[in-house]
Length: 171
Image 1 (tube, rainbow, N blue to C red):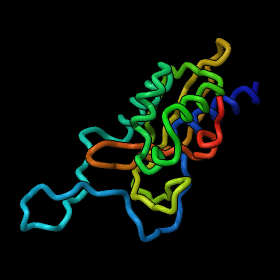
Image 2: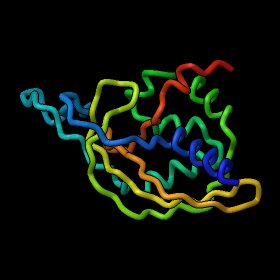
Image 3: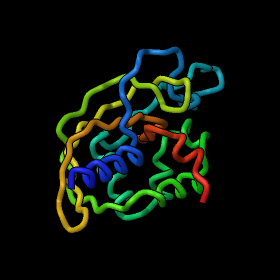
Image 4: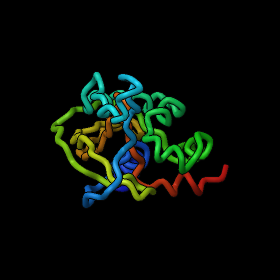
């Protein structure tokens, strides 16, 4: 059963993008262009999302649990969307065992600078530590892990920890 739990949480990590922290780099996530006026050429700061990073994680995990792959892909960081298509992401997702996520408890949220896997970029993220409970083969299992949400144009975006699983996927 320990192996089954490792498989479940391996699936969650691949699909929700647990990323380790990295050293600061020179590039940041894209910022929205200024809309103030033509004379103002400085970009606006990246607007803050309307929801917490923890609420975004809960929503993304619900999309995942409901099999809404397109909606999950829409929540992916745009720099990773450049690495693989929705069809490649769907292919990789379909090769993973489905799980029913029955609970997400947010334990902590804190700022953390991380690398965006598969790119040379670094980003300021909100690390979200969560206890996730899933049902696998009729049995509930829980694990606690830390995920990262990155604010991009006023919305939270996640990263996948290993983009090569989607890049290399062939149906």
